[in-house]
Length: 102
Image (cartoon, rainbow, N blue to C red; front, side):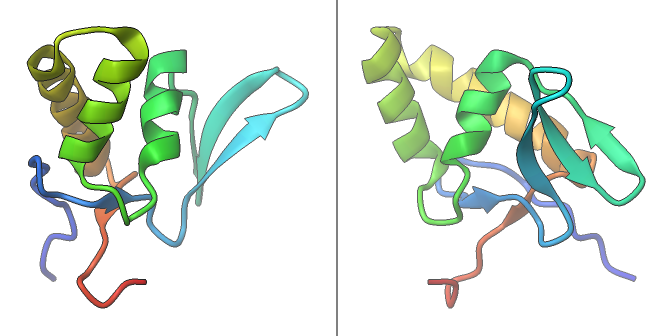
C-alpha cells in the first residue's frame, strides 16, 4: 500500500481528507478535527490555518493572508504554517487536492 501522506510546500493545496472534518464542539467550546476513532483539538492558530485548507488555496496564499491579517513577517508565517500542516499530514489529518478537484 502506498503512503497517502503529502509533502507540504508553498504550492500544496491541503484539505481535510474525506474521513475527517473540522467541527466546533458546543459542549466543550473548542474546535476539533473528527476522524474515525480519533479526535484532535487544535489550538486557535491551527484552527485558523485549517479553516483556510479548502483544497483551492495553496500554502503560499494562506501565508499571504495570515501575514496581512497579523502584520507579521510572511516568511516566518510560511515556515510555521508548513511545519504545522506537515505534522498534521504525517498524522493523516490532511491530504492534498488533486488538479481535477473543483
